[in-house]
Structure formats: structure tokens, C-alpha cells
Image (cartoon, rainbow, N blue to C red; front, side, top):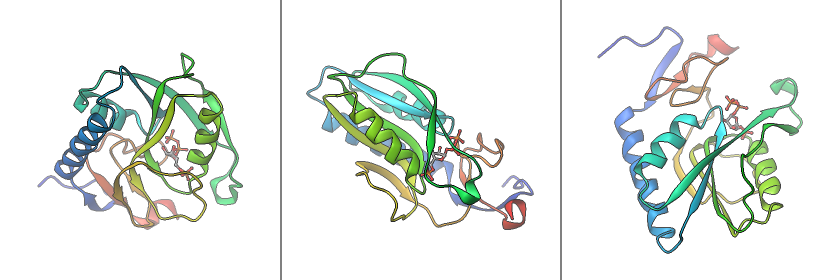
Length: 181
Ligand code: PRP
């Protein structure tokens, strides 16, 4: 086994388990949308770019991919739930079957904002697919497809970052506490 980066405490979810779960989620989505002409996947940048690419390539129902970029306001330590739109979709989603694709739902603030914003654009349907989630009371929207539950530690890999590093690790790893405290 290769040595872990010194920032990494341990691997929580292996590359093999992630890929197996992404395949299962793609199959679930294929089954649920088998009667639709087109599905729109909306990947949320930056974190979801890897998951969106893998999920899309494993899906067989006709679909297109678009992206949005969202950022939290201010300092996470005093975060009040406000988020802002950095980059919007290329095309309207009115009357489209939309699936929001996230790497992680943590506090839920990003997804709460996104869901309301996208609902207001009158899609034919709106569902949420997240590969990872943490248990939080602040989440106000249903999660239709969930890959894994995660413990409340700082995780990196498979799109998730610490200060924009470690996103390209193929597995999910726990960051050492001394790195971020
Ligand atoms: C991460 C992640 C989600 C959001 C989830 O994005 O990709 O979009 O946080 O957190 P929440 O449920 O507490 O709102 P981040 O803001 O770190 O930006 P990034 O995807 O560009 O890394």
C-alpha cells in the first residue's frame, strides 16, 4: 500500500467502494427515469465535478450535464446560512427533469438555498443526489439519492477539499485534526 499524505489520518471509504456505490446510484436513477426523454444533471462546483463526471458516465438514460457554482458568505466559523451564486446554469430548466448532484450535504445550507432557487424556475421535477451526507438538523429538503453517511470529521478526496487541496484523491479520507485546528 502506498504511503498516505502526512495530512491524512486514515482512509474512510475506499476507491472501490465509492465506484461501486456510484454505479448503484446511476442504476437507481436509470430505473427511476427510464420513461423520460431527457434528464438534466446539475453538478455543484467545485466539489461535485468528479462525482458528476463519474455518475454521468455510468448512467444510460438520456441526459445532459450543466453546472452551478455556489459559495458560502464569510467565515465558516461564524456562518449564518447565507450563500451566493457564483456561476449560473447555461440554460433554463423550465419543464425539465432535474437532478442536483452534490459531493456532500453537510450543514445543508447550500442545498436549502439551491433547492429553493431551482424550484422557483419551474422544472417538471426536482430531485437531489448527494454522494455523502452528514446528519444535520438544519437540512430542510429531501435527499432522494444518498451514497454514504459520514462521521462529523473533516473529510477530503473525491472532489472534497481542504483549502483546495486533496480533491483528486480517489478515496475519502479523514484529515488530521491538527491540520485544520
Ligand atoms: C462544499 C460542498 C457543498 C457544500 C456543502 O462546497 O461541495 O457544496 O460545501 O456544505 P453545506 O451543506 O454545509 O452547505 P464548498 O462551499 O466547500 O465549495 P467547493 O465545492 O468549491 O469546495
